[in-house]
Length: 330
Image 1 (cartoon, rainbow, N blue to C red):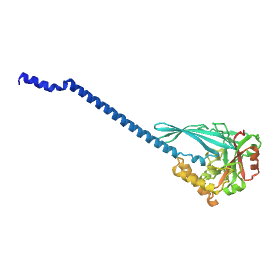
Image 2 (tube, rainbow, N blue to C red):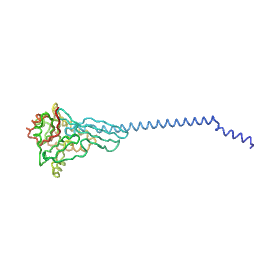
Image 3 (cartoon, rainbow, N blue to C red):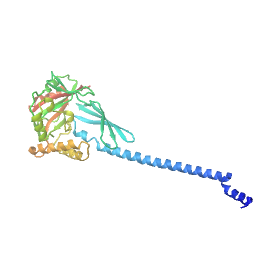
């Protein structure tokens, strides 16, 4: 090959080094980079949207499973107040306020903060009334008196009809001696379980705010009878009792009892407290055989002024009475 031919071929091969071709390459490369960036941004946006939307859906579903119906049947004279939710990408923090009605007023009884993750166990990270309960025997009251750490008010306790105790408090007598401008909460425990019809006739409706339903199974009663010695271990704390709210404006009937059972049955399928609810339904089934399916009541919560509570002193079916929270009337 001659030198002229070789030079000509090199010129033909080196055409990519020309400025116009280099400029076209740079433009193409820039366009590709922009295209890749746009695709990456769009893909990331779509994925984050799907992730966020899916996360919110699951968290909302978990919140729905934690609905407030459970608070309607659990906790003596304690009702749901309000709740606030603070969402993160993979969890939600739920702050719930609970209230207690005393006469025609209500007080904040407790606050609970829970962390609800997308999956896994729900953790209670803070409770206003205290995460750990400290019980101290009160010499004057002759029993263990429990206090709410959130507001320093007394908690109520119930005494089972079928168990024996070393001491049965009668704090109703003390309640009626308090200042006339004080609203008082008193837990009444009965000598024998009663049906709603019997309650209406014997206890009446005025100043009756909440009814304690007998949900104890036969095995639970046997265990308490044989294994528990201390009175404080054999009482039922108000915060752990099943029952329902009532009011003097709407007299309670057997329909209230059926509605209560239906609510428990619904919760036993969906609520996060399935096991305790199923145990309660088992207890109701066992102890209503003698009452033809009608729920039995072991006690009640009454509230009002000292004068309003005097009428309960005359009722001989009351086995024990415990003072709970007290607040000023005005």
